[in-house]
Length: 397
Image 1: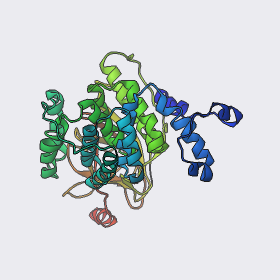
Image 2: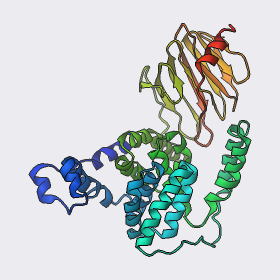
Image 3: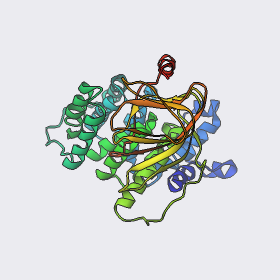
Image 4: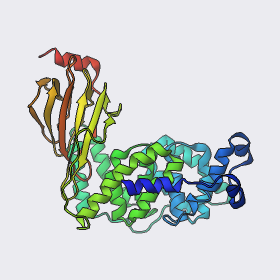
């Protein structure tokens, strides 16, 4: 993680003062930026376009692809046109831009894609680029083994709850979209990964980062995607991607025999973090998180719930084990009764079983949770457990 994070930090350094004035490149930032936020103007010219866009870790064409992807994904309409023009100048073909927008309609929503089409058309009209026609080239071939594993994951985690979504995922998303020849497999992975970082979906990154590297993206290029997006999606989202990418890198290195087999001790209360409000209700602290390296798929952490705090509904593709360390809590599978749990209890949740767990309404609870990942995915989060449901379940004790 330190190496990847260092890339972000080093990339952000900018010259200041008289030395910066002497070395300053031609301005890219409009005069209005200097009039309102001169510091932003300096960073734009000296760092973003004077440093980041000139770094050799990604080709200018790739930087344009991930920039347009981030802007489309986050609905930054006003900036799309400028960067579509820059992408064309950097060698991205009109049909590739159209296919990038099509790809991201599935990953960031139709409204963003439709808006991007409107802004892109303005640039195409200015440059007299005629209607784009779909390619009649041979469809791309996906790796059969990887596709079989992916399909099994969808069937196990999605089909029981949303069978139509599972069917569309297999037939349309991967059966049609990912095989279209208008954009290479490498570039599809590149823009998808960029979009996921931009919209703050690091949970989806392991699958797509692995797929990107399988499709030809080098490790240094993957790290540089996060670096570049620090400027277009913000530092928090870029930094959130770093530990995920580090685990992907470590897993791939271990699988190829490039790392030693040293044991690792994770100290008590290490790497403390607050549980995300997207996945937990109430006050939740997570510490001692670890992730096994390939071929191991196991990971876990110590999770402490304040009274009344709990997880959202979720599933695990290969199941989960909970060891209750202290306090009093509850666990419940969908359609079943809530069950009280206490110190020393061990709970096994089978694969793909929708459930939640947390503290009781009057006492905190701490458990150690262990789960295995399937194709880089260890958990699928769902809706939150409402206060009404939570309190009703405890009434059965």
